[in-house]
Each structure stands twice: as C-alpha cells, then as structure tokens.
Length: 299
Image (tube, rainbow, N blue to C red; front, side):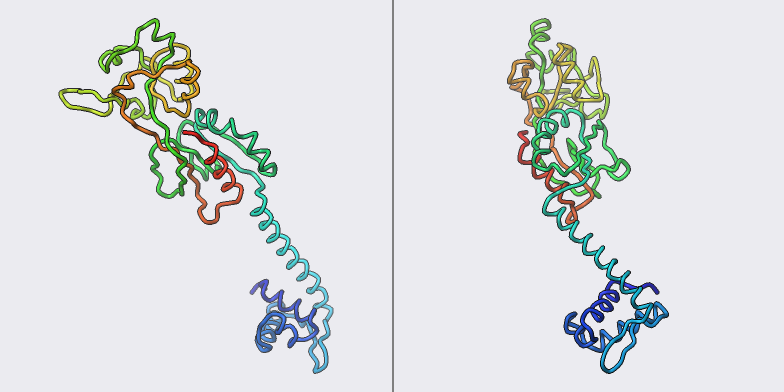
C-alpha cells in the first residue's frame, strides 16, 4: 500500500511538535488516532521511523531520510495549491477559442487588444471553423456557436441573438433594380450557403401554394460555406444575401449595404452561445473571457 498525504502530515507534525500528544493537539486529532497513523505508516514502509520512549522521540536513520522527502512533498503540494489560488485571483494560461470566421472577425477580434491589456497573462489561441468542432478533439476551451444548439452534453452560456436581414449593395440595386416582393426576389441573383440547407430558408412572409409562410426557400445563383465570403460577394455587387446583423450592421450604417423587403421580413434572430465542457470547475481564464466578451457584444 502506498502512503498518503495525511500520513505524511502526521509524521512531520509529530517530529515538529516533539511528541505524539502535541501533534494530536496541533492536528485536532486524538492521541490514539495520531499514534495509529504513525504505526500504519511504518508498516507500509516496512521501516521504523521513530524510536519512542517515555521521555522523547528519536528519528532513526530511515526516519531522517523519509522526513526530508516528506517535507519536500508537502511543500510541493502547498506550492501547487497556491499556484491554483493565484490563477483564480489573476487568470493566466492558454485559452483556445473557436468561432465561425464572420463572428471571429466582427465580434471577437475588435476586442482582443483590450482583453490582452486587461489579462496579459492569458495566452489566447483563436481558431475559425465554419462547421461545428469537437471541443475535446480540437482542444478547444470555448466555442462560439450561432443558431440552435444540438449537443446536450455541453454547457452553454447565452451571449445574445442577432437578427437576419435581406441585403444587397447599392451598386447591385442600381444595376438590377430593387425587388418589390418575394416573387421578384426569387428571380434575382441570390447568394446562399452550401450547407446547411436550412440557411437558404429566408425569413420572409409570403403566400406560397396558397398558404402563408414565414420562410421562403431560395435557390442560390452562387453559394459559399462562409458567411464572410457571402458578405464580401454582396459588398462587391454579386447579388442579394441574407445575413445576420452582427456581421453587416456596420456596412448598413456606412451605406455599403442596404436592407430590402423590410416590410415582409420576419423578425428571426439567430441565438449566439458560448459552449464548453466545464461548469462549476470552469477555469478563471474561461470565465474572464466570457464575462469580458458578453460585456462588449452589441448584437
């Protein structure tokens, strides 16, 4: 059987206190309990560590050797606990955050300089994937996901939601005209996603096949896997797109893109969530990043 830290602590305290009785008082244990622990430790080691007399305790040669090692082990444990405590007080270490490139570029990157100045001991690694990644496989601490969450094994923190809008550049609208209704929209040059197919269901009120519908399935003239690629195509006059406010609001304010068909646009918002495997044991650096990002996001 291997020794444990409780036994090491009892042994060291007995030597430092000078007697089993004094050690029991220091450890708030019974004298018999301390004596049994010391005896059990010697049996495990198959060695006599302390010679007991009615007047004093005397370390054997084996006891002196073991005492040096026991002190080193207990000191290392204290150092480890202190290091963890310091991390809680001042977050530090590597933090890997993953998000789709549009969210990373428009909602995370603009705030990284400030975050780095507030938490200089956190080493950030930013990765971008357009599809859902396996957090454990990719060694990701936090993943930002847009849309409804599917994986129930993950813990999640809601960061907000972002409304979908139909947009095009002024140059495209000047050349091709602005669609006045859904039917005209479907005859226009549309930019959509390669996957998932549900992203090509645009939130528009229309009567299709005699029934009212809150979504219209579009057939893209050009498709892309990344929302950022679709945004760039729309900015370049390549067609009409359906994108979230978090990546296009600045373009609309600057006049680079215009919203269209607002009168038949459904108020559909994509939820934005941070997902992670840790819960109560979430590291200080993960919590610091999420608190910071949540306070800066305007969705």
